[in-house]
Image (cartoon, rainbow, N blue to C red; front, side, top):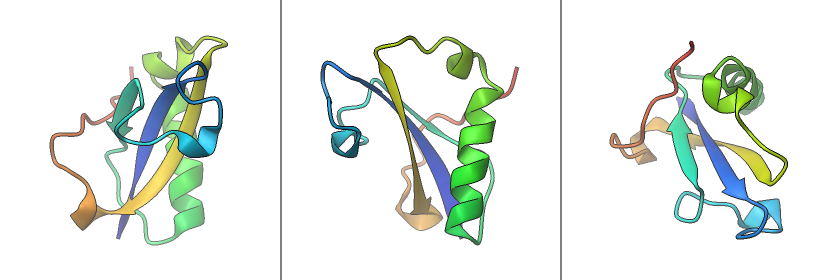
Length: 84
């Protein structure tokens, strides 16, 4: 099973979005759901972010990257996104 990680990176720190990762993101959040399909994971990750205050507070210098990872590889200390 997969879970979606939502990474928020600064364009100043990571001009190329592909360089945005867990260790250089300004925020890393985990979507509180499990997915069997990578496409479903990505779509739900984006949609879930849009429903949060974090998604509404993004500015022009923020970039969003959604990564789908196997649940076993995700650290439990990563904060879970919560909908308002």
